[in-house]
Length: 510
Image (tube, rainbow, N blue to C red; front, side, top):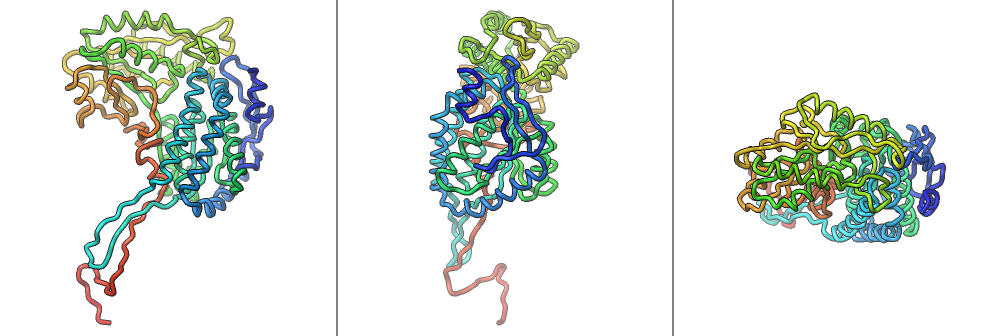
């Protein structure tokens, strides 16, 4: 399918308004032009939000919340179910758009849309399970319980690397909780935001629901600033860099709002002497090169016991020699481009820094040029042998650079290396030794929000809470009891007696 036909199939025009409250579209800010990192081709342009546009969105969302919160949760779940069906019908087209606009492989683009479908399914079931607790009161003739109420407006700031899935993780849960959502997509993937908004808008219109339940505000960092500082938005969920997250947290915290932060990762795979190397190599290679190393869960560090180090090196070289780089819409290719030339510059700078800090290239990186690479966004996946203490290793580079690190002695030494970085998102151990696996998962094991055994660092499963610790931000999305952050909690005491015993035995004579 041509680029034009693909965009038409999703009702995306060459010039699009980038602000919406549902069926209404507007936007009086500057224009963003979307170009594909695959070939540099122009896709479409999108208007952004002005301050006036943003105010209109917030006011419309407030009005919608007043009505939406009164809809019973299972009926809100029915709307999410219909949205899931809409995604199923448009999976192929939306998955292609994800790949086209941000450069991940078509398989990954389709997989991302499948994540959206899965979270909708999860949310539909959850809409009948927003349970509180019932407890006994210390007062005679009293009972206590707790319940969860809709929170209000939820601001969502998403990143380019998962331009549709992260939005759905938040909205599907927020909607069934009775909240309304205002979404700022990445300015590097504005069309994905427009496409998703048009799909949910059609569902809301078919059900005669008001404007403002799902809102879109395209724009740059200034839109995120407005959202973070607006007291009418009690929760801001932000996905992106640690730098961005700290800024959001400071602004939201200053007004005592709530923030849900899913930020940078610097993820490691530990390979112990008892590892299945076939599993280890498969996990490490996919984790390092999937999405061209632009996942927050991408494998950045491979920590290998010295007894296996040389064997792992040899097999990595063979595996990397088989990686095919090119058009991500071609299923024969394993790795597509970085998001833009700025990302390429950051990748090249990281390679230079690694060598300056004592790193040795096992697999040389570099920018790809020539036929098929005209966009200037294609790079080679690199492997650098380096000491774990090097400064570049302590920081996340959003690119396909894998740092190969040796450890000796017991597992505790590998865990210490893994945990020494400031980020704490995802981690993995490859070992058939039960004691090692359980130690890795223990209180003194991995300090990450995700800790896996015999599976890589990449990916998240709907149903499990996704997020990490330390500079990753501490937020949790997608599963388990993550829904609770989208609600306000209330404890209730009910007196069904004819008396009113006061606390601490206080007496009043009237």
